[in-house]
Amino acid sequence: MKKLKLKELESCLQRVDTFESPKLLLEQYPTRPHIAACMLYTIHNTFDDIENKTIADLGCGCGMLSIGSAMLGAGFCVGFDIDAEALEIFNSNLEDFELTNVDFIQCDVCSLSDSMSETFDTVIMNPPFGTKHNKGMDMIFLKTALQMAKTAVYSLHKTSTRQHIQKKADEWEVKMEVIAELRYDLPASYKFHKKKSVDIEVDFIRFLPRNS
Image (cartoon, rainbow, N blue to C red):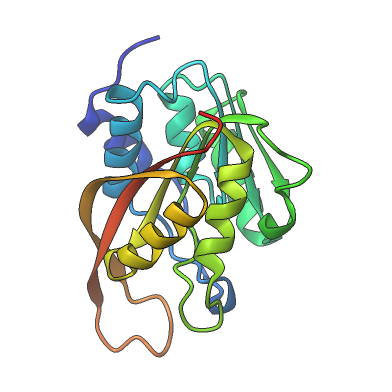
């Protein structure tokens, strides 16, 4: 398989269609191609946690992280999302990219952990940040991901919540490493957004489940 450079990966991911009408209740903010490419390239090249691995993408939306993982040689990738409309866009993206090693399941991510314990090598996600109507949702996603992963979980979280997440990681006896601090360029997606875009400080974190 041809090794993709970071710029090539980002360029490919710019072709991924995203939400036309994001849902506020689900905190649907698409992962920007630049951030997705940087995340995946690091997971692949620094930690070797993508190529030939089984990957879960929690709250996958339109499939940005799943598609990027497949392009970097994932063995098999499964996206999980509650929103049927997002998964329709995901399916259309899969057809456009002609990928056969990616699938998706419509479900509530919060109900997955028991049935999917240690099913995937790697879990990658950009979870809801747990603001507005979803307080604590980021931690529910993280706990679920840690139960599903055999090797590692990679996730984005607001930098302002780092201490809280570290406290939870200690409580769960999970190793946590902040790989990078990123600026998440959030475009105006909802009516209450007054600015065209806003930068949010985000941590890109690697978690190692207790069993790894």
